[in-house]
Length: 66
Image 1 (tube, helix red, strand yellow):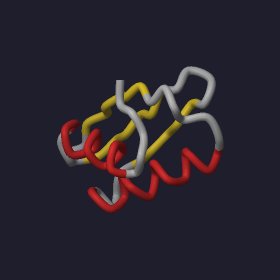
Image 2 (cartoon, one colour; image 1 turned 90 degrees about the vertical axis):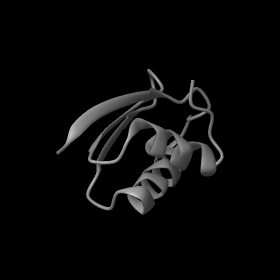
Image 3 (cartoon, helix red, strand yellow; image 1 turned 60 degrees about the vertical axis):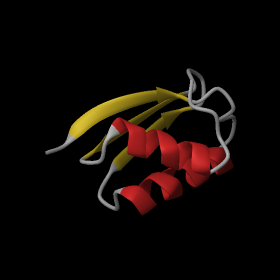
């Protein structure tokens, strides 16, 4: 089952950040769809893992999840 989840990542500020976050999410869920908006600092993930798993992956990549 695919669900969409949103995370605020206040320290995401460039495409390199987006790439790092996307790679981290894909290590948890290879089929997840990741969309990041640098203006609003929102990361939207569509996938089958839990919100906790995605948040841990983003934090593990060195980012803050607000």
